[in-house]
Image (cartoon, rainbow, N blue to C red; front, side, top):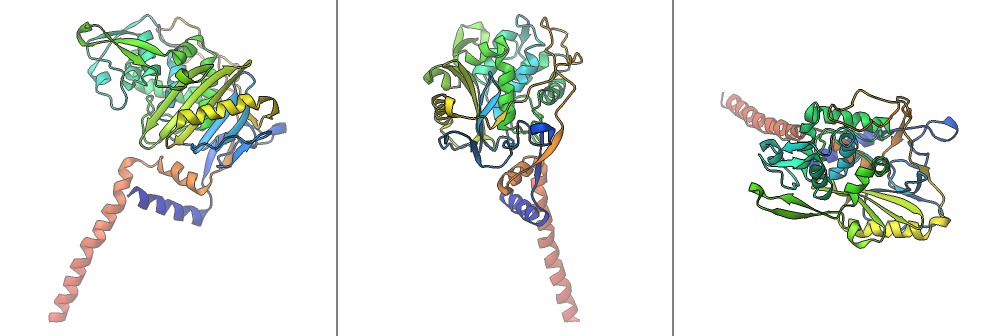
Length: 384
């Protein structure tokens, strides 16, 4: 049925013209254009200047210098795709300044019952906020995310609202959040460009950087009978010199997503990838190595936008002992970036609620039910 819906969407695109995705910012000299520069569109063309990057399987990627903000290579950086657990980078940006690391949280049945990847949060067991953040980063634990969000003021709904506000504040206007775990929720999407912004903002925080680069931690067993070891799922940390980690992700619909960073030769680079079938660690390593090796030859093809400086206090948590980071009300203006037909269909399909997929078969069923009755009426008239 998804194939049928995709075919219908393609037909609609041909008839009505290309679907557009919102991309924000101002181009050179104040002209309107995609966020980060005119070359950074949602088109699937690889953009680089100075050397040809290696081929990778991801539908979208960005390689950028986190210190200068220069985007050095990109492919469909503003395509709005499912982020999977890489969205937890934004979740962390919201929760880290709001929660005390020493607070103790008791696991709940709702935490343990959440779907997807888990680190092992059990009802009745006690965990520090610090340990839950480790479970969130290393094991991509949705149960740890649920426990952290529930511990904050307003719970899950308030966290979602703060995440959407935070994304806008830092110029990540390709992003819309409906589930802080990154699961495939209706209307949830981000972009390779926005993931780079989240990494840049996150790695500027000492706590975020520490969690992102931690290789191992220990979680308590049920009944407090010892602990078990949890390893970081980001394999870049274990096999790439200078790796800083960050976050991996996977769902059936998003496929593999990735945020990784590394520091070499005085440069700190980030690579983000979305909608990759497999081999994502190898592809990330190849992109990073290519960028480090050709750094002096490469010219920026865009830039990571910087947030403004006006303080914002409405989302300050009651339990926080840290100063809320300053963000701005001066947001980049919005423009329209044309999606190619394939990306347009995918972008359209992920916004359609799951229940809508049931509509076509129900309508077709009605046609099949009406036809026999019509034939019976004709047959009855013929007998008279």
